[in-house]
Length: 252
Ligand SMILES: C[S@@+](CC[C@H](N)C(=O)[O-])C[C@H]1O[C@@H](n2cnc3c(N)ncnc32)[C@H](O)[C@@H]1O
Image (cartoon, rainbow, N blue to C red; front, side, top):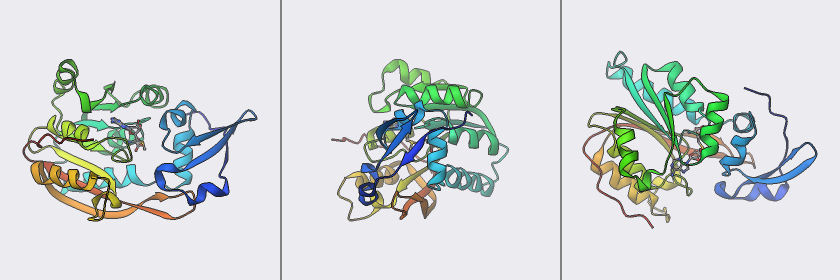
């Protein structure tokens, strides 16, 4: 991957912001611009920047989720069974790279909602995915559904992409419903979205999803990354097996 030549400035006021409001200033060739941390498209456009920046914030989620999935697969003695994986919210392929290195992936398909993610994965990690779709799973057309089901997935992985206006409950339910019973499902989610005090509604929808179609094997709180202020941000890693279809969930 190409070196990242971006100067990053973190203004003092940015150290007090909530996670989905965080922004930084970047300077490239003397030109400054403001970029929200959740503006993934802009991050991906700059070669190496997404990986370098999140490494500096000590983001551990790709590693934590992939290792948790690997451990459960081994625990169930299924490490020889080939995986056909959908990497949902695949971004520039960090998770795909790890999955292909550490697990027995027969097929690995990436999917993201923004074209910049696919372009970055093709640029930075061209040999990882068998296919990479740019699609909105919340509004799945018949042709897209057909394209996806032809892969006969048996594993769904979603890292750092649920909530915060990213992948919503409906899209996640649709992704789960693409999996057969017994499929592995591994994802992470901010601890706030699982708490009883969550006001976003996401906690409730995730709960319904889990009750409807999920056998929980592992749920563990861990440090996802540090905030711009240097505070730890905690998520849950969740691994389970799909077990029955999720009811359709209406989202706002
Ligand atoms: C923080 S990045 C994580 C990327 C990758 N999973 C990783 O861990 O490096 C979140 C990704 O989710 C994608 N995303 C957001 N909403 C989505 C949706 N509704 N469907 C698919 N991908 C989505 C974003 O475009 C972004 O690439």
